[in-house]
Length: 210
Image 1 (tube, one colour):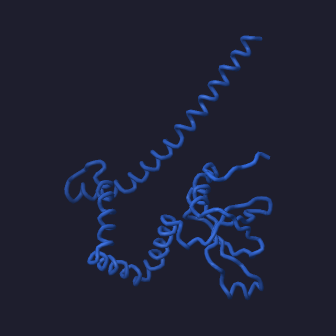
Image 2 (cartoon, helix red, strand yellow):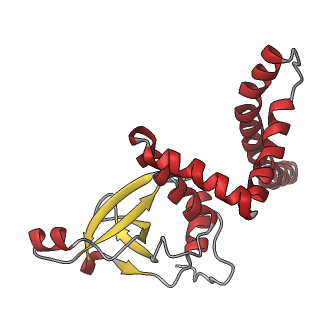
Image 3 (cartoon, one colour):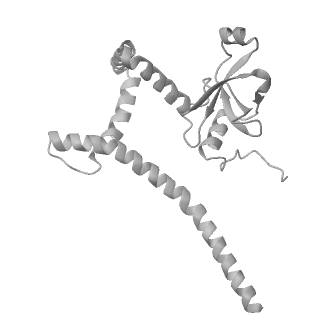
């Protein structure tokens, strides 16, 4: 009996060690994977370009070029003359019918998720989705459209429901105001919850055990 209990204790300790190791390794593995994916995404095309034009096939050269290019463009954008040039470049994208919608939408999305404190998302709400027995976090993105309200004969609010772990995709739903539950949660905290799949919770929250 004692040997059996001792064996169970060893297995329990091993299980605890395994879970602890999983908690430590998983975030690091995910971070490394994302960095590797970004590295490959930026490095391969430019690496091929340098190899074809200059005969330089150096791993990481494309990624290094992008890493230097991004802050350079940022520096130019804050400079008066550079800002004028980039403004003309941006206007060119906006004037072209093919790129206008894609460019403006992409820019708005990037600005929204890089600066969640801005007013692109008005507030965080809870809505019943995808059925009556479950809830989803969403963001109110405006006050609604008069035409929609008139034709449905009720006030509908635009609610963006982001996906996990990529909140840049999702669904836009127009929901009756009575079905939207406002939350005292910041946009930044809501995004953390969504990206982490509910693992990361606001530090100020204290949940009572049910």
